[in-house]
Amino acid sequence: MGSVGLLYVGAVLVVNGMMLLGRVDARAAAPLNFFVGGLQVITPTYLIFTSGGDPDTILGASGLYLFGFTYLYVGFNLLGGLDGTGLGWFSAFVAACAVVYAGLNFGRLGDPAFGVIWLYWAVLWGLFFLVLGLKREELTRFTGAVAVIAGVITCAVPAFMLLVGVWAPNTRTAAIVLAVLCVLSLGLYGPLRQPRATPATAPAPELREGGSPQQVAAPGTATPPTRMHGNVAATEEQTARGTTDVPTDPRR
Image 1 (cartoon, one colour):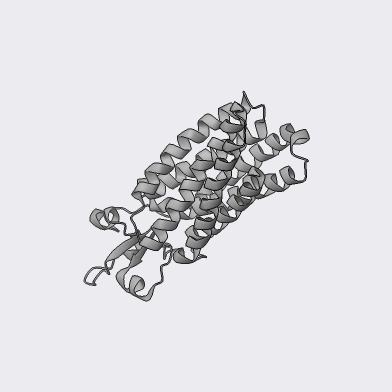
Image 2: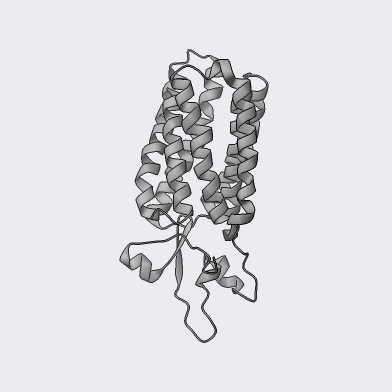
């Protein structure tokens, strides 16, 4: 049952990643976050109640709540236009827990492939923390790309392998392949990193309120006020129209 949920976690990571890359409207991504978030709360609850007290089953199910709560949190942020700092700091907690779950998979659970997967999730949620909690908006596009890659190679592919019964005999091989792919994906940092705002290009107050470098107007022109829609900055004019776009650097 957990493998079914993993498949749809892959779907929501791809959609959220495309949102961060500016390919999906923020509000359009909200429903899938609610669907998958609800699934990732119901699934571990069912697994725990039917585990018969087996500690390893309960341990494996406990980590699913981290993701269920994340996606529900994202959904509420996107629809409610909430600031993303709360979600960002929750993501820091998820990242720390993911490191622990990685160690447990390498050791107690004997699944090195999922050990690698949990480490990659720790990196991804750490990036969510930087982008949302610390407002490191220059990492937005890189984080989006990592989310898309994670959705495919750490969720969708393993889910299908689990569903057809070919995962267990190949965990060591899968661990090596996943480790190589995950490390290679981090090479996208350079091409996708946006220039960080400096005092010469963007006043600090705008950035602290959720603005992005490209939203700072040239001298002598008015800067439209911004609001945060989850992890996406939008002008009040966009909010009135009901549309938001992930900020992108106009110099790209």
